[in-house]
Length: 420
Image (cartoon, rainbow, N blue to C red; front, top):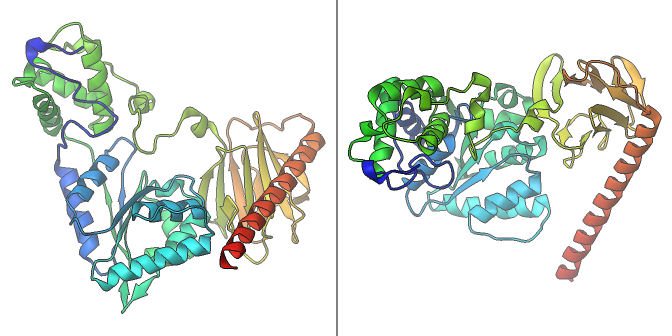
């Protein structure tokens, strides 16, 4: 409910589009200082992380607005992008709207652009959001970009944004080119109680309220801080619901919804990096080598390809792993593993398998890598037609490979026709 009686003209705490006002608090100010220092450092790579409710996207937008107008900037959400998708989106942000191309073609074009920009002493800036949700093949493409230099200067500045520190990703062997350039990492913190009141009052004033305590008295601001734990995204959501549902102002204590800790994400409509319930219940696959975690992959798709090819969803670049090594298939609550006639075989709990239904804590072995299945909702062996599912999965995998080969052949034919 909006009330002209207190001067409120519009909803100050909406979650879509530009915020009513960017209210900078201490942690955000420190984060902006860190981002600026990452750009001026010769290494030029920094990591910004914080929970999905910490306002990372809003902070990134504000940071970009303050950059020089002649600086080429790309802000890309890396969530579940394959290599060609990632490169296409980066080029699109830099002003090159292209049709489909191979990863090599897109990479070469991006390299040429970055080198040209760097020659003018203005390396382009790539801000990559949701690093924790990126596919390994896309991470490899990112690492190649990080190695590009001209006159001993790196040809691209990179800011990584994530919901977590992502140390296992950055410490994996394939990420050396990024890790070696890291200036540092900054973790966003929540608002204090005083900052919460300033945050709420500033947004209310922007929307016409001269006396914001007529909507949220000081003690109500304190309660909103407690209910949101000081995270801006949750605070916006709770404040928005409180105003919309209030039958009068000022707001009373009973008007405030106090979500349980696990329910706070429900207030983050459109917030960055929020996982749906379906995502959070999906099996998690933990990839390790000699006991060291290399990657954690949430299986939200019905099929996941594991192998050495860059087309793989879980990429394992190892000589003992075949290009198309194994396929994981979700069917209702069952998780099926199918070996794709790999050279060195696929093992589950030290037993070689052609196909099997997996359960929680099973260990899949491929060469000297292992994949642990983290799926607490599937602890018992599922009594289903395993051979029938195996045949279905095999047919799907063969069909997928044929479609992929056909697509690549058509694309190569189109390229050759242009060159002719």
